[in-house]
Length: 192
Image 1: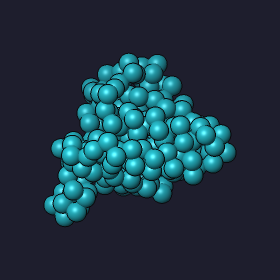
Image 2 (image 1 turned 120 degrees about the vertical axis):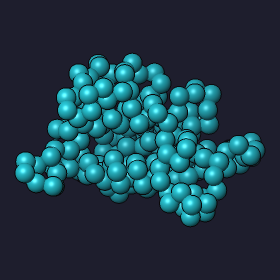
Image 3 (image 1 turned 180 degrees about the vertical axis):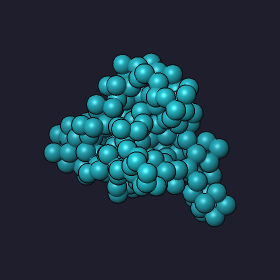
């Protein structure tokens, strides 16, 4: 049985992302999956990478626990809104602080290459946005999707990374949102 870690990167507890994350978990739980849901807004950590990579800041207890959860997981699910063509600051800060050298990757001495330390894991991005998919692809070149999928997850060895996009949020009605919640619940049920 796969161990699933759901990370909700939306800071607003009344957001549709919270509903999507909860519904994914409900779907996974219904088939007996080992599933944990974490809302980043509930964690206590400084999202700023204060010293860059010159010196890694000491991790807060919540971030140490999250590294343990990531290592134990077979499948990561990241739920977040697309803001300014990418993802919210709290999720960026989480990535900066948690996916650090010698945990997620390791640079090789005197080499442009690196070791991917999170291989063997898969991921799904569940992204909400108001931009139409075609416009985001054509004009924004899928900037946020590529930043997370390639720049973070692939870089650390996590693949494949599937992406589910729900748009437009601001003009969606209750019927559309119910359909999207059912779709996300079905995704959770498929990972036995």
